Amino acid sequence: MDEDEPKPEMKASGAQRAAAFLLSLDKDTSANVMRGLDPKVVSKIAEAMTDLDPTLCSAEAVDSLYRALALTFHQKTGVRPQDSYELFALLETSYGPEEAERVIQDIQARRRREQPFAFLEACPANLTARVLKEESPAVVALVLSHVAPATSADVLGAFDEDTTLEIVKRMTTVTPPGIETMLAIADDLQERIREASLVPAPRAQEDSLRTVADMLNFAEAEIEHAVLTRLEEDDGETAGQVRDLMFTWDDLATIEKRAMQKILASVDTKTLSIALKASPEPVFENVMNNLSSRVRDMVIDEKELLGPMPFSEVLQSRAAIMSAVRALMDSGEFSPARASDELVT
Image 1 (cartoon, rainbow, N blue to C red):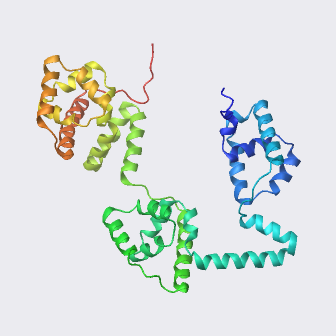
Image 2: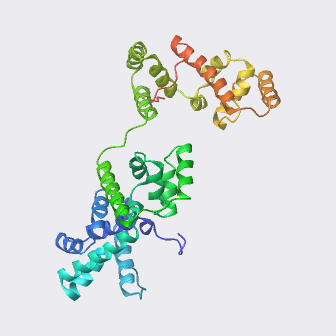
């Protein structure tokens, strides 16, 4: 290993290294050290203890952690900002708990008036967006105008294009209301985000359909057929969507030679030429490798002659081919490899 390259155990996260160090101590010493840690990091360290990086488990790795810790203790370091927990401990030692609490509360109250929405920078952007989608573009613009640009950008990414444009336009002309109104909005938003964090985010319909498709891909063929048949009777559209997700255009890359040739025999060269535009390389190669040299040359020539075209037309041609694939599957002439199939020799 290069002497300048960090050892594997030193590439682990801080929580993982702290967890490994604490686990190397006896129980009482480890407990005493943890009592002095910021409560905000204790949960991360505890979680790391249950899923420890394998590179930290050897005696050599622990020795390396000890040496790194000893060097840190003896090195001259600069200063860094203190968080509320550390500052309280320092003030408590100097002035007692009551005065320390009063100073901390004064600092927090002042910062809250200066940056009422600062708490959003510690919230997941998708959670913030989920709550803000219930607000008008004017309120969203007000909120996002008072947080860091990176946070605003992440939250805006969850809105549709038209709403994003409306929010951005309002951000350019937003006039903040009085501070008490701002604080009231911030308090309400913080509470709603807290409540929303306790409820799982609603799943997009496609995610739910994909879960069903993945499940059926692992099921036995008889179960898959029975489920899809009943689903077709109850809701043909949903059944079609599940079928589409069970076998997609990208899956054509994995089809073996005889099955691919059977599929291609039912497709005309123009449809194939259009469908292969902007196709993933593995799909393109598998298709071309299963065409005769004459048909392959025809497809290549036609693909070039067609020139640039709307992607919507490409998708239509792919849909026509996938319909042919599903027809072969329904007739039993083609059966894709199943996720539950075992490979044998």
